[in-house]
Length: 427
Image (cartoon, rainbow, N blue to C red; front, top):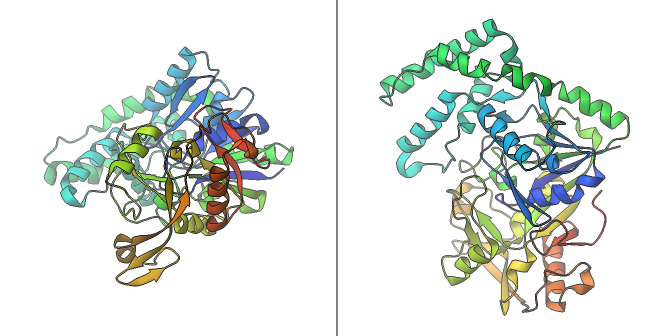
């Protein structure tokens, strides 16, 4: 069986968790392949809300094997806090697998993240301060700590000592902070070793064999396309590759095993943190989208910046990821507007761009060119077939589908698992 990739098509918070959960019963493995606890999914099952930060959404579906891949950076304190929270609510977490090659967030990574962001001042990126960026930087600098290092105290001590040789100089001499003690860090890491050991696996091998046996593997991206470190709105991006290419490196599954890429796109647009956002609204419409959509970060609680649907962004995501299907979420939030603007192009210094501009400067100055579509006032939350939607809502879906570069296969009309209009099977 092939693998399926699920990505975000905008700046994150599109509803990937719900999309993963909706497919959960049709898949056997759900793999988180990038990011850490700097982003989250909110999944509503039977009226109960679950906020997941580090764990794959598939952990909520009985029978599915949730996997944290080698491309993820793992804060062990957060991992066990999440596991304990789910277990207290009766969720079976015993199937979780953790890649031996995943990198660990060290205490000094969290410290450096916070002090560096403060040091940048007005040039700050808008990170969550959870140490994700510094951990990825350590990985690329080859001074990172991996899960497998927990099981060799000598190696662990050497690696922590090597990582802190430079970092302590930076903390003390630049940021006027106390040096971090090597033994304290090693002791903290080792305190998790026995608890971690049962879930650690050679996950690329496990997933390869699962595919050989005809199992279905869903690769779930954190964050989204416009936050990709290579293809996003750099430097206002995350530190990993949430795009479909990152699914291969972050899981150990080769591209030849993937045949579908499902991109989740919100019926409007949101963004958290700094960076360009052409359709951002600063008026009552923006506040209404935030309020009706509950647009506050799952992990940070920060209010999200809100704006209208951006078709050039969706087309860009379709190209970069090779999208075969879109899942359009939160259509219900748009109920009540007489006209709903959709961005179809940009203007930059009198020039029209039908696609995303190549440079950061042009995208920063881009002004949206809107097409007004008819709105609707009817409640769509009870719709379960496309024909159940009001005619204007149907036309909105078809219009953004035509603009976005790939077919829309499902439409979310509410937060609950069942509140989905299926246009064609996703699995």
